Length: 186
Length: 302
Image (tube, rainbow over all chains, first blue to last red; front, side, top):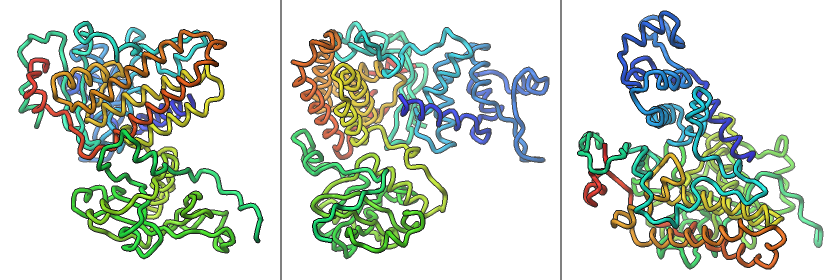
């Protein structure tokens, strides 16, 4: 439990560093909203942003918690997708492994909106004197044709620990692909 | 002094993974070399020492991992009556040295890695050299922290250094931690944690990072079923399924009924050890969009 707590604490420290926060353009892209809208709201104080640098090198960056809050407000992109994108972006800037910031970002999201509380509690947290099992329990044995929920979510592909692509899997397997594979490769 | 007890070892040095564990029955025929491997033979001769330690990939060397050279540092044994430790400030060796724990029978008094003696050696020499042992997760973090400090002069906390989730030593450490839990009732939960570590490691071994353990399991099974992943991964998944099934029974049992079932705990730990051994495969199949497309799974992409 101490190890899990330490890892989460380290991730939180990474998330507190403004140098790794997304700027307004990146935030707008992540949330699929107009950058001008975000900029206007940041100027008006309705979006939390911090200014880094001086003169022409100046940039406004948005804390990860604020990005997640905006994701919940706008709902143009699934919150889980924003978490995954933030994880990749910040991990690449901070030299962390992709995926290492997931738990911390999910905790932030759950604080903003309790309906996003992680479905899976950590095994150590789930430990109970009654032989409690973690949420993923049984996945190794259940028939594959009944396990439909694996078709949703974000699959992060990496080559030698370097993220090489992200596949967002939808719930409708008969849908035509909405993103060409060539675009994913790029 | 003859017959005197050896001096106590400084804490935090870590330990070793034995050659038996590295080359277990489930290990691939040609296991990949791991960072922190201690090599003898031609590799040791190349650095003119009793052993060489593999540093690649570390720092900028990581960029050259495919360049046909590997970086080795000499390892020199430290005798119990060696006077050098007494001259070190605060008991810590100077920056260009890293202290290793005792390793029977190679260096019963501990050893020193000399970063200044690091040389580039042809990859083929490293591949053919016999592996004496390998640093465990704690020892490897210690080595990486010292090496980083040597190059950058930055203070680095070893426990903050992340290891790749599919490094078998991470899983071995989880299995050892489970074995060390004294009570059987608590040990079954530690084994559940080790099982989750194994699932995540297997997924990352094939280049998959997924948001949940459940998704990792289901995707590994699906990709194995359609032939994207090799049969060896399918066998590892079957082994993990059997572990889950055994643990299921143990989780249902009351603590008083666990005593007669201790053999099952040992079998589970051994099976997880075997899964860790399979993680040493060279160039494991990586899931790519092209592979998914070739397997007819392109319609799952949005």
